[in-house]
Image (cartoon, rainbow over all chains, first blue to last red; front, side, top):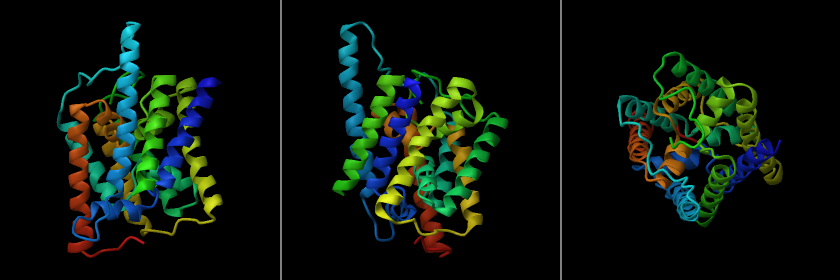
Length: 148
Length: 138
């Protein structure tokens, strides 16, 4: 039960972050990606804020855990840079550029009643199952305590 | 810009708490995939996270009394959804998993993924908006 409430709380916090930064509006994403148009740096600001907090947290807890011989920070997973990584990311980028939605904001937009998000999320789920069926992904699931 | 950085900081805090309390990576594409294709406790932990995301959108729409305007015709949206779902599973992460979590861990794989999807997304927007002039986002 505690695990479910933690996950719910983390999802809520994550979603509030996406909402107040405006990342749930596809137009704001496109504005960042449109380097030949009226470019907006806001998405970079969101990434900066998120990485600054998370990277600092990871370093702080790793140092703390090292003292108790429980080091949780593995710098990088042992997986290789291969065609699936680059090809998958390239396909994701195309879909992201067309719609202005990536997975997190799409699910938040679903909650706020954006009709297009329903179609997008259903199609996204179908794409994930197709990918799993085609065995092109790294693994069925990213397991706990392993970086992506 | 200040709101963007503040919102980002909340996302970073969420990823940090999820890691420290549950030992999991807050990568939304992985969480969604887990909610679809795992079962039992594994599934419910992921469904809970997604419910939190969903509820934040619902609450925000109520609070601001604003429903997002429709953006694209449904066909390109569905096609984009398929590509995002297929691509994020193939590469093992999205903007949150590779972007926020992976870059915070100095993962070279994630850096390669982020640079790749940023470049293909920017090219796609350029082609759609300035070459084909197909549609303009609201």
